[in-house]
Image 1 (cartoon, rainbow over the protein chains, first blue to last red):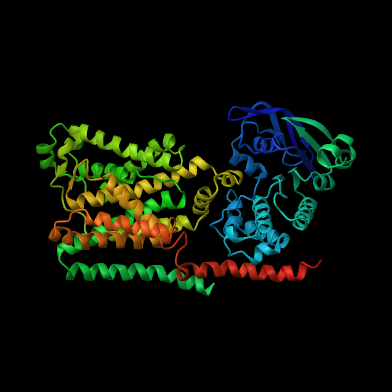
Image 2: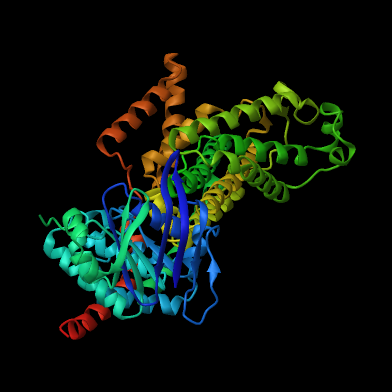
Length: 241
Length: 350
């Protein structure tokens, strides 16, 4: 579905991605783990078009039978309309607007009003709390609710591929469980997920496959279970002694 | 849905009530007060349209008077009687010298020229944010003043154009107040308006959701400029004179005050703030003359601004409109929500 080939990217003057290659297949959950500053967030933003890579290719095929497109130089809004939704790090809600408006902005590029209404329903079924709080301003929600709102908003563009950056950041362990369960459910309903996580244990449990990044490169890859049992990964990211 | 229909009636009734008020005012009060009311209306147009740029989209522009100047000069040259043009602007190209337009087409062309100017400076300037943008738009205002001063064959330089036909009356002002408020209201409650607010609130998240940042910003800037251009024309044909210093930094300051006091993003707020500020200035100016204390209105306005920034930093209305104007709209989405929570109750346990 998504293929990143030897991507090199800079943030300002800093050389962040030094040749990242990875692949996401249809209906998978793929996790990207690694220490701070390894380039995980930058990988996501080069895919969604917020950051431009200097070298390398990013290829995307929304459906198994669709034609593959090179999205390396495509503007961000077109990437969204092709079916990639990027959920940035740190609960970026529009705090002055209410929950409903936040969700509607998620559907900004769509014109099918009927389907937008039914997707609003779908998101509220996934996260009932959002339906209950629809008139509340997003800034007044709790951290967990804001995270749900951000995920729900990203789903409103009907993505084929959801890029999630640190959904567990700053949330209580129980809420993280809830969020991860939701991700599993979203995935079961047909959305492919590429997940960046600090919480490696949870991520490896959820993901079918995973990549480990270190200083701008992918150093390890395998199924979630393989990596969870890998000695180095256990030492570095799972806190095993 | 009943409530929504009632609201549909509310606005036409309001417009009609306003029209009746205009009619009564025109037949009862004297010209001086009428002209003050016209200025108040022009200020409403300016504040509401600036609100689109500064309030909705968060582009802190001080360039609004510049767009007024563009619109004002374009319209002034077009409506200027041919005989006076021959006298005052002998160097005018003959195709322009032969024109003598009526107000409406001149207004529209003036507005469009302002829009064009906004497009031209928008591309480079809108890369900037916050105070950098404010300084850049201020720079544009000053460049434009210099340009007008030196384009003597079109503008008569620092002397300006005087003796313009007095074409603006309360009906014209009222018409444009209604159009401005209507357009801005529609924009605010549309997908475009939400995307503008999204950019103001969180640029990165907006970009992630596929909102084209620069296109939306330029749209907000240009739409605001159109109404500023129109307001400039109305202003010029009310004062019947226009000089390079007519549209000054002080004016930019007053307009920004209106938006901040009303609440960035609130159309109702901008309207009320424009009315308030105009009345304060008009009430205080005889006081200034009697006491010989010129500038006292500036001081009072500034103190008022400080107080509002301290005690109500989001302005009178914040981003919202008063509840009775939008309540019904929310009830519609409320109905969807209610049927949803019902479904959740059924399906949530599975």
